Length: 111
Image (tube, rainbow, N blue to C red; front, side, top):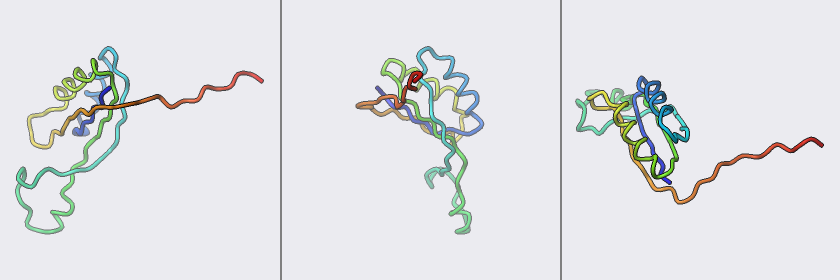
């Protein structure tokens, strides 16, 4: 199993969700609102410390745990759909998952 994580622009989330749901074997995803900034070499230096401390952009973090055979397709779909061609489009990465299980409790039958 693999875990695919991505940081994307918020305006790309709807299109990405539609593209991923259409994939056979898509297992679902977790979405979190986050903020971040790029490396200093990728943008113009600020003149004031206030600008430096508030230079964060809203982003969405996507987390997906998927079987190995589906993970690469998901990775490719994210990189295709989430890109705009500008700095700050985001980042996608895959890590190995040693073990995973669904957490659920079955409801007891009638008493």
